Amino acid sequence: MTTAPGELSPGLVQRLGRQLGLDTLYILVGFPLGLITIVLFSTGFFLGIGTLILWIGVPILVATLMMARGFAVIERARLGSVFGYRVPPVVYKRARPGSSQARRLFTPLVDGQSWLDLVHGMFRFIPSTIAFAFAITWWAGAIGGLTFPLWDWSIPRGPDNQDLPMLLGLGDAYSTRVVFHMAVGIFFAGTLYPVIRGMALLEAAFARGTLCGVNQLREQVAEARAARDIAEAQKTAAVSAEATALRRLERDIHDGPQQRLVRLAMDLSRAEQQFATDPEAARATVAEALSQTRETLDELRALSRGIAPPILVDRGLQAALTALAGRCTIPVDLDAPSTARLDPAVETTAYFVVAEALTNVAKHSHAGEVWVSVRPDATGLLITVADDGIGGASLAKGHGLAGLADRVQAAGGVMSVTSPAGAGTTITVALPL
Image (cartoon, rainbow, N blue to C red; front, side, top):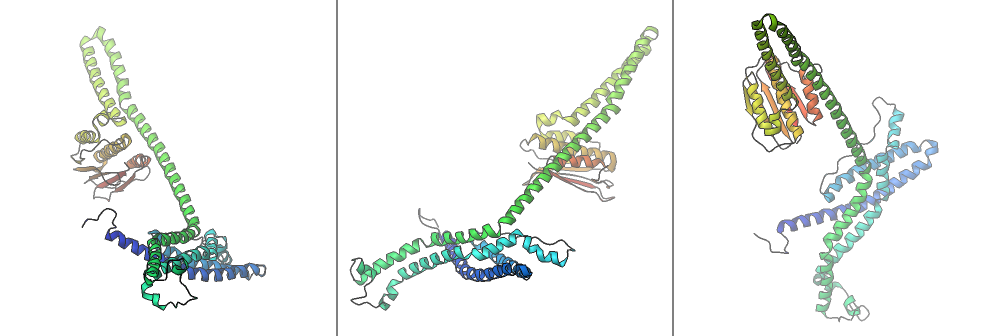
């Protein structure tokens, strides 16, 4: 069923009618609550302040604040019908565990949100009264005007009792009175929803500002602190990962190419001396030096792949992972579908996660097969590396996976390791895209 242009759909009409009923109920209930709270809270507040010098006022003020908390909880629950979402509960200040009874008694007195609850209870009658007056006026005007023909007969009329149409010179005929009052009813009915909605929002905005303001500020401060802590943790992890990578690179160069270059220099020096006395031995020494040169080049290429693999830069993550799986000494079942190029930092981190995991599997796991999955999902890039080895891997400092965890954290991701003894190891990493 299609809706003509300018015509409201049945679903929209139903939602507007439901919201009109909720807003009206909110206003009608808010007015008596405002009268109750102003009497209770004003009495408790001024009585407590007046007797504060005698210390009797302290428990009176505390009782008033606790009562204000109770009414505030009710009001926060009512706000959901106006704003369309559930207002989160407020966390009030509490005394520390083991505190004395006196400290527990004074805690509500130093809680800013409790005092704001009291302020709301004492002054809520102002927006509540305004909203209630408009609601009653508009509902009475709409209902009374539209139903005027049903109760017109009950209005007594005489020479000294003229109705409004006659005073305006519109005549005294029945039809004229009906048309006039029906027009008034149509006006009030046509403007009923925006007026009631505006009044409900006025009353609810005052309530939200006083009952949720401090709590929202606390949440913003907590979120800012959490963001700062995360940033500091990522910075620390990045520095740690960089330091670990530099130490490993230094160790690999020292144990590999540097030793081979020293031996190459010694072989060439020996060959230079042998050329004069034993040319055949010199040729053999040179041949061995050439072999050392090739092995040195291979090690340097491997180290360069660890720094910035060219295949990753040129052809993307899938091709780099395929090459990585092909070089592994253990059979690898790779599940890495082709996707659009990701952020270079994400691709590099994902590559090193898989590379380091496969290296650890080859060195320590005694596994017969490895399963690697690299897939994007709704939250980011999900990487899983599982083997059927002996297990026992750990993220604790001093273990091989600690540096990998730092690299993942520096990239803003999270990493978990499941490695029961004798049941293989599963590494799961989630990287934000």
